[in-house]
Structures are given as structure tokens and as C-alpha cells.
Image (cartoon, rainbow over all chains, first blue to last red; front, side, top):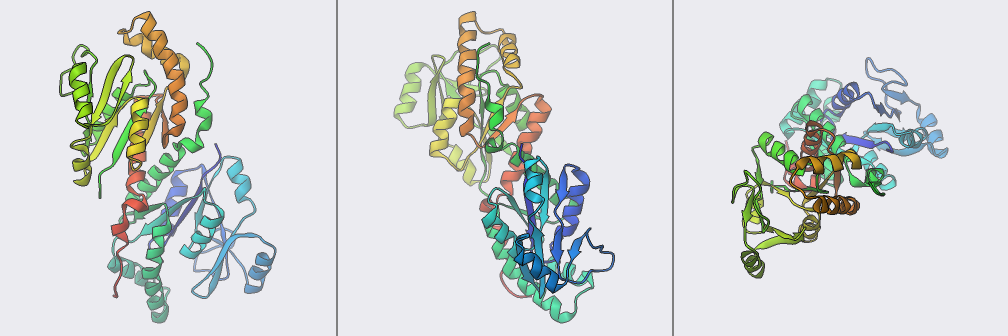
Length: 200
Length: 200
């Protein structure tokens, strides 16, 4: 069976990074697609693990070379998904997880309608605000901008296939795992199982 | 949330009855839709529990009164699904399980495209034959006819949404439960969750 292209995103602060790490830890068959970005590494982040950290000039060169499945500018930084390797892996039957921002996901959806688009929601706006503030890496101006963006981004979630409320990591991860199990049961992915022709 | 209309069918002998009983036992929120039939009750079957057992004349009267969501003739007997109550229950948010034969399911699919159509497959034709023989309620002629029908019916499964291989009851039931969890996460069923408008 061709691998699943799993696209998970959500408004800032909905916890998609944590959810995705849990999914990968529990599902050895799923491979992370690592994004490229021009934003500065946060404490603990390693180039080539969390992201490929590029300068703006490098990023623009990759764009020119057609290396991105999608790219977008978010809060003044570029983010993009290298296309090379993803198609190869899907053909080999590997499941690829894309953890990308809302704008990026919509670009991917146009190019890859076969993908499974999952949108994470916070349990409430209050909880979303608490999570963004709790991160402690935002100045007040950036915080306000992220919250305003989150409200707008949540409406974009209506264009996804599935929505999962991230009330607890365990609940959200279990729902996403159920979504993937269900997708693997789609008739369109299992035409080979209907080859029961012939006598007895 | 509006209830799910869950339609489970499969070729004869794929074990849909056993699977459906397990699903209902594990999911108190799902209500069985009881079919009407003109076939004779098997040992242990009770009118109004497994089926509404009708005479052919009674069944035809129900058809004339428009009481059926679908009906079909299978192996010389009529089977049908009373429409009354199902729509009411869905509106109340109850999940309704329809366990019906392949022909019946396709009729329902035309009228209720919102339903979730799950097709059960046996692990192999050999296993299917063994299961039908093991049932011990078939004469040789009926057995041959059921096996031939099964091969034809399996191709109809390509028109369903999901396919589940009934290798073990536990595996198959777990996959169906995942399908229902995933369906409850569909954005189209959760528009109310995106009402995050307003300030902070």
C-alpha cells in the first residue's frame, strides 16, 4: 500500500509539536518530514533534527531550485517543506508526517489532495492564550499578533478533512491514530484486497 | 452532533453478525436498527430482537406504505430496513447501526450518502467457504449458491467507503471503532467547534 501523507497543523499554540512527537514515538512506521525555516533556533533545537535552519538567501535559493512542496512566510520567517524524498517514501509505502503551519498546509492540499489533513484545535481561546504565554519566548507584541492570527487561522481549519481538539495529549493522539487506522481501511487504498476472482 | 448512520455489510459468511454484536456490546451509544424479513427464524431468534419476522403479504404491505429505507430479495427471502425511527434517532444524536446485505446497502447508499459504508471481507475464499459450511444450516445447493454469490458480492464492496478484513473479531471490531472515531472527527461534522470568533 502507498504510504499516507499525514498533514497536521493548527493555530499557533495548539500543541501540534507535542502531538506529532508522541505520534512518531508510538508509530515506528511514520517518518517525520523535516521543514526548513529561516527563524532562529530555540534553545535545544538542532539543525537537521527539528528544522533545517537556513538564512533568507539560502531559503530563496531553494525556492528558485523548486525544492519545496510548499513554503510560506509566517510571523516574518520563512517555512518550507522539501519535496525531494517525500514522494519516494510514499511510493515505498512509508507514512510521512508533515507538521506545518496553516498557510503551508493549504498550499500542500492543492498539490496533494491525497493527503490526510488534520487540524488541531485548542480546548478554548483562554487555554490557547495560556499556552502561548506559558511558552515564554514571545514579547508582548508578538504574543498579541500570534493570538490574533490564531483566531483567523482557526477558520481556515474548516478546509481540512479532520479536526481534533487537543484537550489532553493522550486523547488527541489516540484520535489521530484512529484517523490513520480508518484511512488505511479506505476502499480506495485497498483495491488489491478485492481480487477474489476464480473458483473454489 | 448528528448521529452516525453506520452501514456494515459483507459477503455471506464474513461474520458481520458477530462483529456487529461486539460493536454494540462495547459501544452503548450505538443502537441497532432491526431489519424486517420474510425468512423463517433460526433457532434462538426472537421476533423484534434479531428481526421483525413478516409474512410475504405483510412485507409487501410495508413496501406499499413506504416504510422501508431499503428492501431487497436475497436467496428467495425479503429483507428490509424500516425508515421510521432511524431519522429521528440520527437527529437526536444517536448512532444507528445497519447490518444489511450487500444489495440493501447499495440502495441505502443512494438515499443516504451521509452514511458510513463499511464492507467486511473474509481473510480468504477458503476461510469463507469453511465458515459457511461450519454454520450447518445450509443444504449443498444453498451452500454453492451462497459461495457463488459471495464472489460476486465482494466486487460490489469496491463501492463502499471502508473495507475491513475479518481475520479476528477483535481486530475487525477495533478497526471499525477507529473508523467511527475518525468519522466523528470529520470537519464536516464539527462546524460548531470553529466558533472561536471574538476578542480576548
